[in-house]
Image 1 (cartoon, helix red, strand yellow):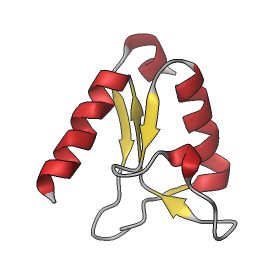
Image 2 (spheres, one colour):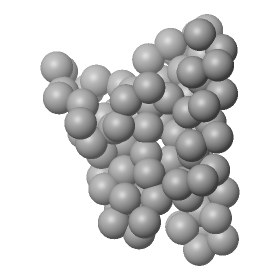
Image 3 (cartoon, rainbow, N blue to C red):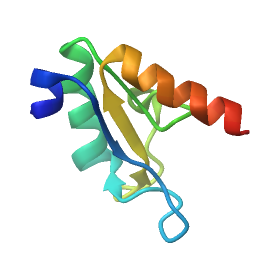
Image 4 (cartoon, one colour):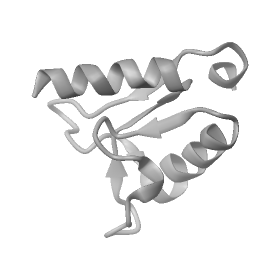
Length: 83
């Protein structure tokens, strides 16, 4: 809610303990991504648009980074530079 109103980035990326992230694609990731994109932002895993992911399991987890286009693009560029 605040990210849409005030800008910025919401991130729940994967880490060493949870490499696939903690948010479930079908229940949390995709619905929030849809709302964010309808509000003019973008939502990604760092490499892939969240709404383009086809679920393989009901409780599949994904890393999430969402927010304004400019802010999230900076994160995507940082992911690309780190590879």
